[in-house]
Amino acid sequence: MLPSRLTKNFSAQVFSQAVTIGVQFGSVPLLILAWGIERYGVWVLLTALPAYLNFSDFGFTFIAKNDMSMRVSAGDRAGAMETFQSIFGLLSIAGAVLIAAVSLLLFVAPVGSWFNLGSETIQQARGVLGSQTVSVIAYQFFLLLCAGVRCEGRPATETMFAASARLFEAAAIAAAALSGAGLAGAALAGMASRLLSLVLLAVWVRRNTPWLEIGLKYATAARLRAMAVPSLTYMLVPVSNALMIQGPLVILGAVTTPATVALFSVTRTVARLGTAGSNMLSFGLQPEYSFAFGQRDHGRYRQLLKIHAALLVAGLIAYGLCVVFLGPLGVRLISHGQLAFSTTLLWTLGVATAFEMVWTALFTPLSAINAHKMVSATLAAVLVIASVVVTPIATVLHLALALVVVHMVMTAVAAWRLSAHRWPHDHPHAVTAAAPETAPETA
Figure 1 (tube, rainbow, N blue to C red):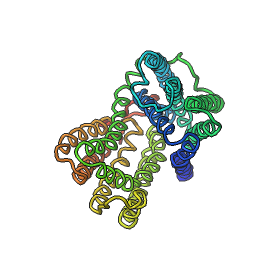
Figure 2 (cartoon, rainbow, N blue to C red):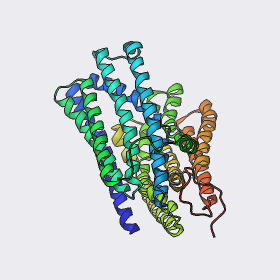
Figure 3 (cartoon, one colour):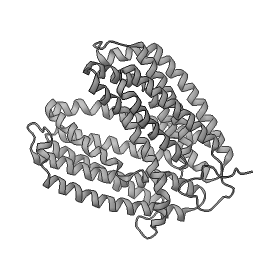
Figure 4 (cartoon, helix red, strand yellow):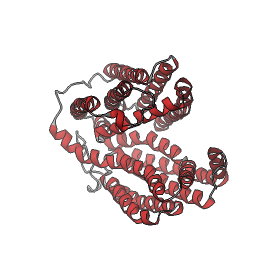
């Protein structure tokens, strides 16, 4: 049963990755064809700003998925309902506040003077920002409904829904642009596709998970308080990852030439391709860890760890060979041979990526049961210390070595926390939002 479920999970992750790559590489030429370079540049600028609003749920929807999966696996549908409706209430309040704040900002603030909109009007900019804000809010509710899909043991279906929704949105935007719509019209089409995806998913959940009611009847402040710490600490991971991606470029941009920044960026892009495979592996296994923990199935949990370790080792070997033999070619192809390739930089970033693949794999079972707090906090702290140390002496190699140190430290910390994790004695009907990290081991 488990190999079959994992095969479905991994197949869904492959589809999701294919959609992501297809959208990234397919939508850009279509939008440039429809609008031209300048107009497309304004689109990129305006759509990049609302993307930061995706952090507006403060990690609660991710923690809700894990919490509901563990509770349903433990036979506690009532607890899962409480979690679902509590987060639904939180998102409703946050969404209303966000819409009010953005509306006020759009009609009061001089948005046109803040950005170079080229030939676009302020009305077009407001239309894009407004539609994108609604899209972000709809996406948060979409993620919460995905918890209703996952908790019933259908993680592959959840992944397929999410990937299909992204593909549908990209197609709607491209179709609107190619049919002659402006930036605001394309954003409106994207918003409509997200709302439609949300409605379709809500209907599916209602039919296939009928016990999960949308509403506030069972929402409690106590459940939100219980989920606050794991949610907020989990948020440190995507924020830290974003800083690790953009931070080195900002530092290099302040002390070196644009060519050096480009060299680091392109080389890192090639070196980090290994994380795509390791992420698919982790995403495919993560819900299974939640189910096993909720059922207190030690044997299944250990089996998942062994499968994860074996696949990770195979992936690391394949990744190392690719970096050594294909990495230089990748850098030259992306840069069209215009960068002074550095083997030392590529291999150093490759080592950093290998350690990143290891510690994120170790982090997966911890995050799946909401026992990730110390690892997440350590990542943020180590990143801050590394930034302070390396900034005064920043070179491409120093930054690459700093990333190696960061990921090495995180590997040690994640391994320690995973080995120190203990299962609780009892098998409660309700699994707490944050799984115990140091409870006495079950006999």
